[in-house]
Image (cartoon, rainbow, N blue to C red; front, side, top):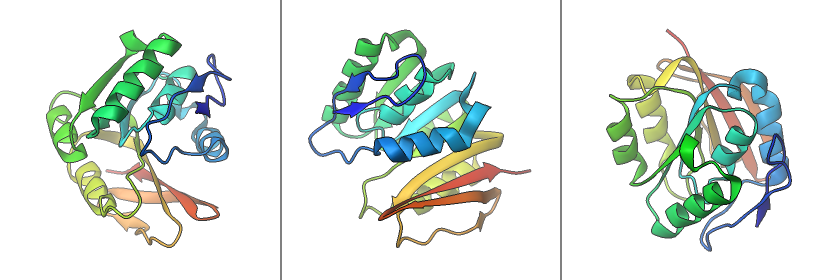
Length: 182
């Protein structure tokens, strides 16, 4: 179980799928502290959503709408249950797809202010996430991509239209914040 750390649903416990590696409360608090008001009234994409904790935390802190994408059925069902428990079914959509297919299905329909990407460690998905966010309009101009990764995994400071403006280390986990520039 993970607990929502802030906003209107602070303290709510969320169910976690068996194979998930949920973002710790300390890391989530730091992410949202660093994002500040960027989440309020935002449209958010939670890739590799697992339990949906990052996206639900965004809703709790004032996001308008969140799309959750995960390829695992158990994660999708867990996210749906957590959304229902929090009363957020009307301001969310959950897609069971791989992240590439999920983003491709969205890129002509939606643009996001904030994208969370927390792929399973050991899976080399971050290069593809950076490429999609830099080369498509899925991330709005001046939108923020928040990437959780292993500390020993090196990510570029600049990737095409994405510029890393903040890096935070939490032991073996690190978070990189990218802004999409013109």
